[in-house]
Length: 128
Image (cartoon, rainbow, N blue to C red; front, top):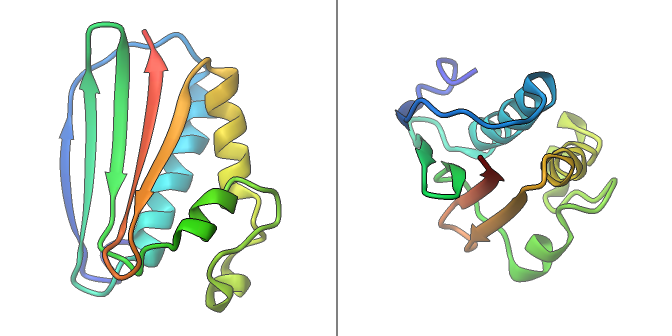
């Protein structure tokens, strides 16, 4: 997917271990990275970080896409909500609510930071 948009993938990934379902977390990573690619402009950069900290593991994905308003950020984890109607044909508004549920079932949290026109950063924090 990223090759079609000529994206740069900037990855710094520590080797980490968490107690969680590999299959479910695979869905989390796939959705967050896929969204970053989908909303990134042609030739942009998607930055991935996976870091082990004292009590937790932190994964972040940052894109250089269109970003989100504060209102959209407050609602993106609601089922069927789509903040950008121009991408309606590309999904059903279920990906991020499922991601949030999986992260919560894994006893973690998901956070988002974004500004319109400046991209978005998603952070997943999981206990070791």
